[in-house]
Image 1 (spheres, one colour):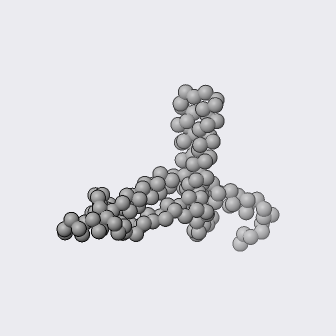
Image 2 (spheres, rainbow, N blue to C red):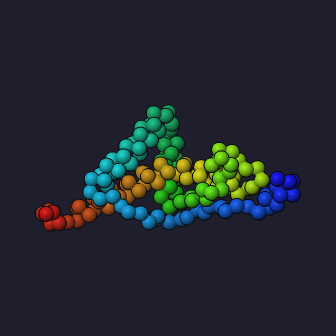
Length: 146
């Protein structure tokens, strides 16, 4: 590959991913799946709260940590990075392509997706568990069971 071809390749970026905002369309788990996922989400949230309580912080720092945790859960629920998998560098993402800036952006989206995944999981589990509980509490006993 000549220098001119390399320079032209750097001027023509590859495909890049996007960031979607809003609730994502997904199939919700049914019955016991909601309960197990809900326990998993509650366990992750409980582990985080236990970790934060083990720190020697003052009351204001606990308030800030609680606020940042809620914000992380909201961002994880509503922000969905989608990197373009065909353009993440050489060797299936093992090496950076120095002649394209777009693969760096896709790597950033992939990293952001990994960082936001636990928040999305916990937030969706809590939302599913809340919907499940509201559905079960709104029906009188004996109805809907066969």
